[in-house]
Amino acid sequence: MADYDFTQDLNETKAKFDMIAKAVDMDSLADSIKELEVEASAPGLWDDQENAQRVTSKLSAAQSQLKRLKDAEQRLDDVETLYSLGAEEADADSMNEAVSNLASLKDDLSDMEIQTLMDGEYDQRAAVVTIRSGAGGVDAADWAQMLLRMYLRWAERHGYKTKVMDTSYAEEAGIKSATFQVDEPYAYGRLSVEGGTHRLVRISPFDNQGRRQTSFAAVEVLPLVAATDHIDIPDSDIRVDTFQAHGPGGQGVNTTYSAVRITHLPTGLVVSMQDERSQIQNRAAAMAVLQSRLLVLKHEEEAKKKKELAGDIKASWGDQMRSYVLHPYQMVKDLRTGYETSDTQGVFDGDIDAFIDAGIRWRHQQRRKAQAEAEGNAD
Image 1 (cartoon, one colour):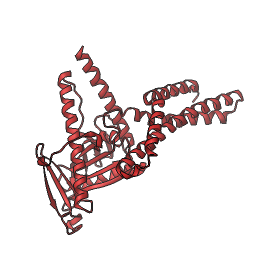
Image 2: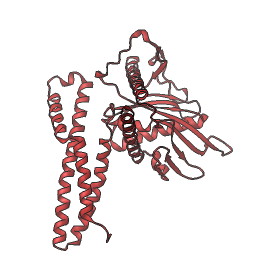
Image 3: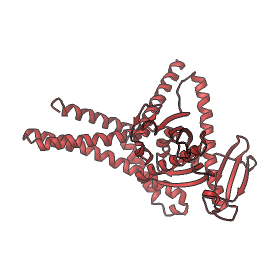
Image 4: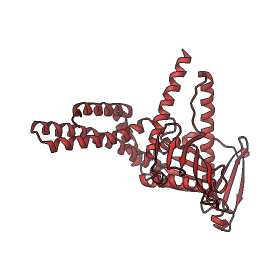
């Protein structure tokens, strides 16, 4: 602590705040809030509940972001004043309090910085997440259900609104697949770094010989489509099948054919929904997810064309991206960022922010690297 330089630490923190404020553009953010407030006060706003929720959600998020930035700016001034007064009066308690407050402020700024790195085309969107069991039999189905719980617990920790849209249960245990929505601004920006193959190594609870089992599950993350996306799907391009929804163990959820499966004939994409009460609701939910997948497919095709023009840009994303090991040791490690922890139970209980933040930083670096290489090739 004797080598600690408060002035240097304060100046570095101020520089980080200035960088964040510049990236966010506080004046533009304030202008956006005024525009959203006008929309939110419109008399017929709630005639369209979906649009009303979008407007009020964006307004709340923008107001919260601006308040956090202004609060951080004030805290910087307060910390500097407190330390200066403490130094003048040789008040060690005040100086220590200033150091502690600065450390807390730095943590908050790091969290704010993450949001500035979510600058992708769809990062501000809500997210639709699908988890599918892969290789590993019943263990893989159980693993998929563990991942579902992990992400729902993560959302619960943050107070994010979630909705399970479809669940396909496996026969013995776990799930074949599940789809859920996280209705929160920047949910896609955060969760998109979770897309890929997740690997679990453990002593199988389903093996009476107690052997070690490796199982896999795939996580797909899509941005929720908006009315402005204009993804046109002609009726001739889809086949709609209906069937009875089923719960765990084959127990019937209802006796009507309310579950819906939509097949997009040109691409072969298939979306099933069964967790809503009516066939109409399930069809609407399935169409929304199908539109999201087609939107991402369109975006990937555009990105592929840009990549071909820019040359070969090497960046591994997806595939096996994280390992969760419970035997012979306890460790969760992200294979892209190198971030790891031995607190496996905490991770399964939804404590995955450090992994997500590391993934966002990694992705931002990859984007900058790809952009630099593309510009180099263009020259």
